[in-house]
Image 1: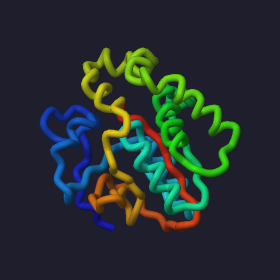
Image 2: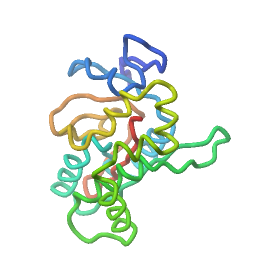
Image 3: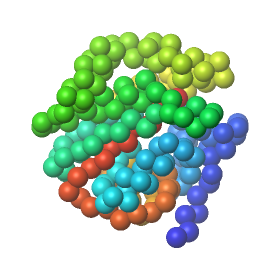
Image 4: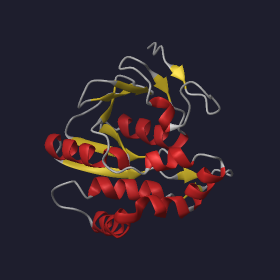
Amino acid sequence: MEMRAVLADPLAADGPSLSPRSLLNLGPSDRVVLPSPNGSTCAVLEGQTGAVVYAACLRNATAVGKWVTKHHESATVIACGERWPDGSLRPSLEDHLGAAAVLSTLRGTRSPEAEGAIHLWEGFRSNVQETIANCVSGREAIARGWSKDLEFACQVDTSQAVPSLTDGGFVNVAGGTWLSPITPFPCSSRSATTYIESTS
């Protein structure tokens, strides 16, 4: 399948990069590949199970949560986390908080793990930007000069986008805009997997 997409350049000053703010000027038909080892891997692997996969973060947590509640019988929410340079798992508070923000909007029976995550979200929601700015990933982002991206990524519920992995890319099912191509897979509509990867 030909994607005809632009690969985001981490160092680009004037085009799509890994900076979430660099994507604000994209048009509805623009296609961008965002290299994301953890988020992309989680999305592809979950998609191969037949689950419907959505992407969420703090910015669209409520929109995704409401969509999933309306259209699916059950959901699994995955905080993708990060990796250390040696490949080992690196816990990611920002991803955990993003997952918890989505979980807080889902209706129905919740696992004890989901309830615990929601309590974490409730404890940090009022100062989520300060909390993330002070965690390891936040301090690294600020040291790299990405403080504006961090502020942008920490905005809660400022987007109504509901990105769903469809035909090889994320499509905003709430509005139809292509968001980002990824490896294609078959989908089933009985359950949903929402994966969380921060944009910081």
